[in-house]
Amino acid sequence: MPTGSVLDEFARSIDVGVLSTEQFLRVLETLHMLDATGSGIELSSLSTEVLAEVVGAASKEQLRALARHPQLRALFLEEVFRRMADHFNAERAGDADIVVTWRFPNGDDHDRYQTVIEDGRCVSTADCVLTPDTTITAPFEDFLRVATGNARPASQFVRGKLRVKGDYTPAVRMLSFFDLPGAA
Image (cartoon, rainbow, N blue to C red; front, side):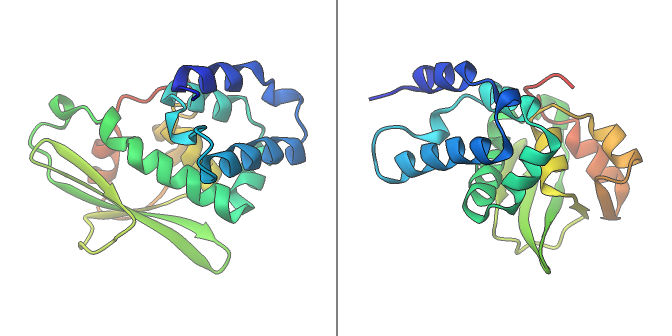
């Protein structure tokens, strides 16, 4: 049964930059299919660092195609939000009490997630039931680059890639509470 390190080695052996957009999606679809069939290859075992490397190596068009692919889009969003707690730095957060709703345009609608930081903990979910202090709206591909450390949050705010509705301060503060894996 493959471990995360075997899947990491496989992912690192692929030169994402030479793949066409179609080939990039086909590799991810195949891995997702193997994951769904219980083959022992689980995308969730891919290390965050390698996931960040794959995103960093992907072209804008490859990430846009990923954003348009319903299953892979959902998979990547779920993985990023599942991993948030692992990269949360409670010491930096201090006594912060913040609720952020995330919105990702998807056709005429939005995918939504919510991140709650309180009592030194971080919990993210697709159940957006709390009233947010702030709402951040971002294109999927820009959010994915920020979440994997392949783009700086501050520059994305300035460029309008991350848009804030509500109080701007919690959004900026909250992004500094995470140890992002990649290097922008």
